[in-house]
Image 1 (tube, rainbow, N blue to C red):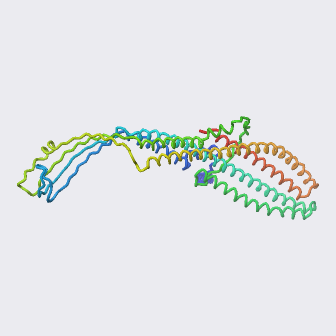
Image 2 (cartoon, helix red, strand yellow):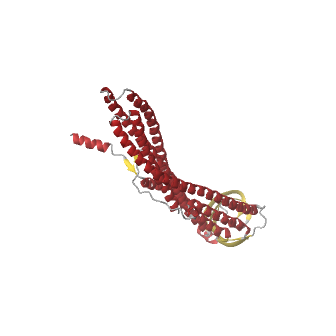
Image 3 (cartoon, rainbow, N blue to C red):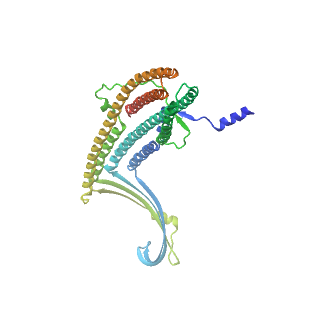
Length: 431
């Protein structure tokens, strides 16, 4: 019975799911609203291309009109105005087509360029989301590691208090050792509360970066070998910039703006249109027995009419609207080139910052590895001295905390190297 109850409890409270950085990146890439919006914009671009191509096709309309006329009106049989009450029905169909309008062809090209831009924007959104996830993921790992270090320190100092109290009872230690240790316990507990709050906030930020509202997942690190990046290539930064989707996006937007100049200029060109229409009508006199009504089928056949027309429209003067639109389009191109300069500056800063932080983190990690080993050996010797009564409790407490701090510094430094490596991977993947 107890076994069944235990199984029931396990099923009721399943183990917390754990995600690595890779799983976080995969989830964010598929579910973040920024990426979904960018995907929708690509779909919109497909419809815009189809709509632009549709402008080359004729538009066809058909309709039926039904009306009554009372009083003075035109007699359809003799084309004379008379006092008549009539019913009038008309059936018509017409087709209009722009035989030549250069703007239609330019709009097709413009729509295709907009789709290319939106494709780059999708990759740009993915990169931005991934970069944010990486930063918040490692911020959470660092805050969690610090909390674990403080917890270890508190557990160690509580155990040390218990042992010291026993030694004080038998006279091996002075009672002041207990006061010295307890004086630091409160400080550590206060730091633990702050560290716990920092860890919780870091996890909230990570969940927000993933667009998750359910706090049912723990995020863990995987053991990975640290990779060494080669920055000896003089064109390293430039290559990353040219391969970055933000840079490709602004280049595509400049092409769009340049094409817009041609679109605006096309308003100077003449347009040629064609029109075809077909119609017939039925007319019936109401309330007048002296007037003879021809039946519907005869009127339908007798009143048929077809027409074909062509029109040429030549712009001559448009109140300087076209000229100003062209100039505005040119200024938009100039602005976009300035935007490109800003993006290049921002990317250069970001890439060089990541590069510098990576190199510094790598160097710091190598130094901390040596320091950690020295701190470990110092702790071992101090522990032996403390057990032999050659070191007081407070000094041993300091040595022990220094070793734990060195352990955290090493973990934090390793996380920093891994973080900069992951950021570089995202930038190197480009488009």
